[in-house]
Length: 316
Image (cartoon, rainbow, N blue to C red; front, side, top):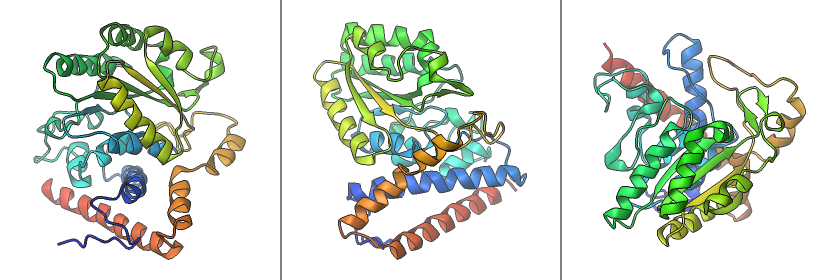
């Protein structure tokens, strides 16, 4: 049985400090491994890395409770990690294992585990938001005392589905939480060319949403904001969290970097890397050392490789 104390001296099962750091680390290592395996010809699924944005998915999902549902976006792999979906389970979907939960019929980013609160997404940008509103309506009508949460990027502002979802959720006071990964880019187009405001709160408030601007690179700010959002949504007002961040990874493993002239931005945002910030917090509170983090990274990287080998054997 795995020991309850991690190398960091924190209770792995119950400590939010440990979960915030570990789940972000696993997300980053897993995405890096997937990109490496794809380039080596060992798998073919396109990966949309969330490097620099991991705190948004992990912090939000760790703030949820049993009965709540989450719909990830293309770039919120950390949501699946934080909701307890193992690397092997995710790889089965990506590599189309015969043991895949969806019978190998789902695209990797549509994979779902409804019994654990992870619902299927949509290929159409913003299409999953209406689905999240439908889940919230069911929760409201059945008095479940639960919330529906959905992630999306700021480029989704151009989708009619987002505005229709906000209209319905605001009017009907649905227990819905919309979490925007506001990284300032719509693939290769900067925000200045597609909208008037960097922040999306001015677009959400008129629909009657409770709103909060969040430091999307601060795991603690995301977590506590999501806890507030859950309580607010259950009290009768839909919530919009505008998580300001910057994508430090490429657009995808297929397309590479699509944003020209971002070297200065990358260097500046690297100072705010959420993994580094959480590690600094743990060190500052006497809960870890640099050697502890090296050991944890080695353990998690080994676990990811073992999961890959396991799923690869299932394909033979």
